[in-house]
Length: 420
Image (cartoon, rainbow, N blue to C red; front, side, top):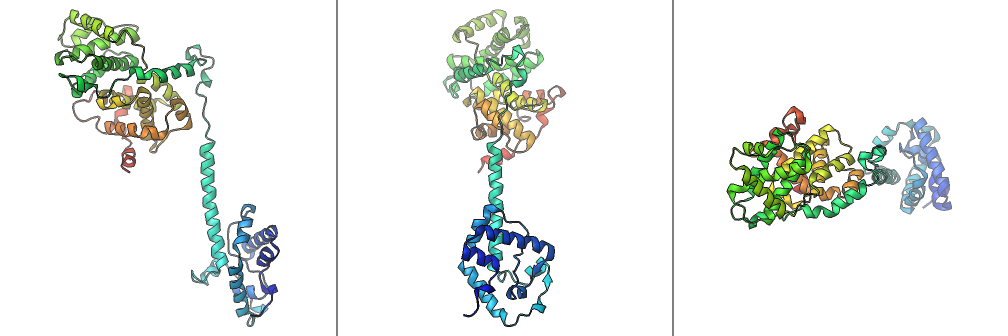
């Protein structure tokens, strides 16, 4: 084969013969800038001693210089050399014309575009993809964890000096407030369906008496703990257990406690005053006077603060967690997980995607993956909230007082994700 190395494009000669990557970079970038001003030379220019301009519309950075120079190896050189030799005999300088880059590309079929053009375009596409992935990883890594107590430093009621220790204690002792998730198997005259009816009714009683939110959660906890220990509760006494549990919770949480006669009246006078007082003694002794247990409510308040919630998110979160109180199957989850999953589900419902910040993860001690199972069950409860017989929670949160939270469309995409 005839021909001299002088017929090779200067950029290739510099990068392969001298190994000067920086020199190759400056020439290639120079060519790109020139092509943006003058268009791209035709194939005749390439064989007439002119430097062919690679039709690339993106700059090559120093980061990729070494990779680009290394990719232009001997197979590419042979192809260009053969191309030059086949055209050198017919080339005339006056035949050289300038054409647009798109016209240059249209002169070839997909398979006829020079290898170095195809290869470099593929390299730059891959580099762009890699850079995008790196940027996303950096964004996730640098997401700050907010100090949710910084705004309360001067509020003595917020006890910011001790708040972390308080919740560390709650996390440590929450197992004491949990019951076996299958405790109903040991009861011979009542079942989980009856429990659901009782709690659904107590939510309505709680609403009519305008009691504090803490009272409801403690009432449910007292009922479950008592039934898990006392295995001989008769069906006709189950409502008495519920009423008495609310009386005990009111004495612990409320400033103004409902009188016993009011509780008897709302029970349609099914029980006497003495029966209520006797059940109160039995229950408080069975529980060994231990009413200081962490319920889902105490975690809800802290975790909503971590989520930087507004009123809409708060009401929707409480709607979801109250639906969970009624369902016996939700006893398998500890209070902190129930609270975290309720807030996560509410955030997903309002945003339309899985939203769980580093701040929420830090203060709840639960990752997004740990919440998906419970959240999926909560979405199903949300879907079925207005159906069946247990509808008190749905009616309660369908009012303006509770922001019509029950009318929010559930996050069904979480159900779709759970299927795969």
